[in-house]
Amino acid sequence: MKLYYSPGACSLSPHIVLLESGLAFQAVMASTKTHRLADGTDYYTINPKGYVPLLELDSGERLSEGPAIVQWIADQVPEKKLAPPAGTMARYRLVEWLNFISTELHKGFSPLFTPGMPEEAKALFRSKLGDRFAHVDAALAEPPYLLGEDFSVADAYLFVVSSWAKHVGVDLSRFAHLARFLERVGARPAVQQAMRAEGLIRGG
Image (cartoon, rainbow, N blue to C red; front, side, top):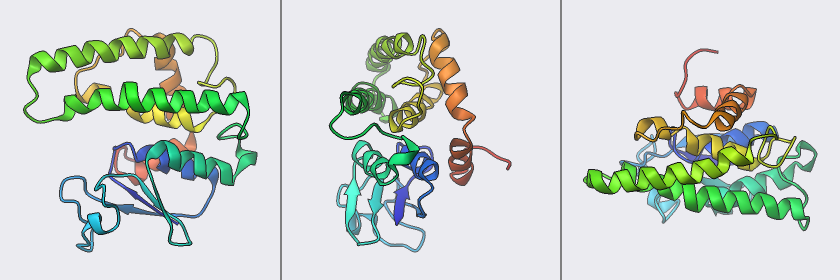
């Protein structure tokens, strides 16, 4: 199995989940700037969308879009409890969080990484992201993770997206519950291993 990723991008989420799962895989870096692999291969020939993540299964079948990928991974190892069983209300809560993180947080950051975006517009997007993170912070007031006591694929996604804030001037310092969550998730061995593998932290 291969995971195509770019350091620090949203592909860090399935990278973390794969390490949490214990499944064997190869991480292949695909530059989001050149859209080429280390050997010169045009990434568009692998994923016509041109972005990461992409999971290539041992069968050769390819799956794109982070929320779909992490659920597929979780369903291969149900004993890890990375996602609730399909068909349960808890699973739909997971999907609810994955959709919120994808559409309200992930996409909310996109304009802040866009070259030439006017500062006035960026200020509006930062304000909207602040409102969305306030919702997340309130949801984390008591449970250690988004779904309760068990770490799930939604927590990996939230951790990754939240890590972008410091790079684009989104202030999360007022969200104490979120801060504790990020510290808790960031200390997980799989998270540390994925970040080291992508060159985001040193040591170990």
